Image 1 (cartoon, rainbow, N blue to C red):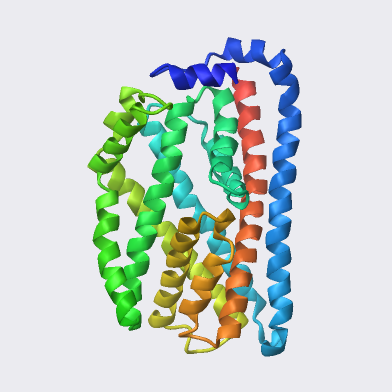
Image 2 (cartoon, one colour):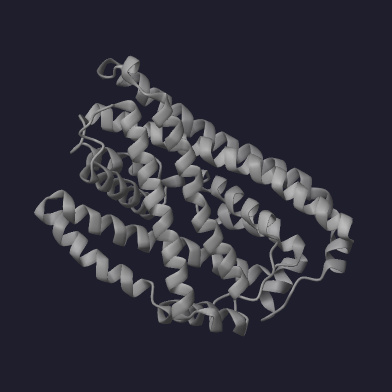
Length: 343
């Protein structure tokens, strides 16, 4: 931790690998395996609670569902599309780190991004930073730019999701109060995505314990960076909404769902559900996200079906995340093997 603290305290400081080796020989190095297992156990515990709650909800509403009508090929397609839909945000995050002047091996960087998703299931938002920075710091990636890049990825994701969800919500004939809320939310989210907003946040951070960021971080916030990042995020939200559409279609096969109206309702439900879940500060937006998705999908299907679809979508998310982590673990090992063979 001493090396990390020095990195945070000195503007523009970069990790020293020789110091990392010296540090690992001390008590901190001996504690690392224990800390790793503690993190794994905590993450698995919260994942178990999430799955248990989902199973209980499924049991409670089983009498309203006809499992014999479910079309599993659409459910599997939903898992696949959701997994693909996480990649754009990961690419945006890696490109942000590159813009900050940090060099990250591609597959290892994507692996760190997907691993960080497991931190959503732990109370608070710090675990995402711990998991991602913990994988990148030993590779020479500075802590401060990593923290800012996660902040950029999170804020742009939430703001673009809010904008896309509100725009699609306007096509669904929502209640008047929701219509007014969407009209207010859209311009506010746009303002949050301006480069000047991020520079202002960096100025505030400079006066805090985190300290001043390297100049390369401040200079990286340009219109080009924000447009590119937002474009990746929008693509991700569209794919996630499409995944929910497929899951819902697999649960309740109906010609009425396979329409532009049905698709846009699913995109709005998923994006706004995620925004509400993030704002709730609950681990991974538990319960809140499902409630919002259920409420918005109730315009397409009966409420018990909408609730089951929201729970099934959560489970599909978990499966997709673990599948991607498994695939990227293999890709990361192959990348490391190639680097060793070159040297």
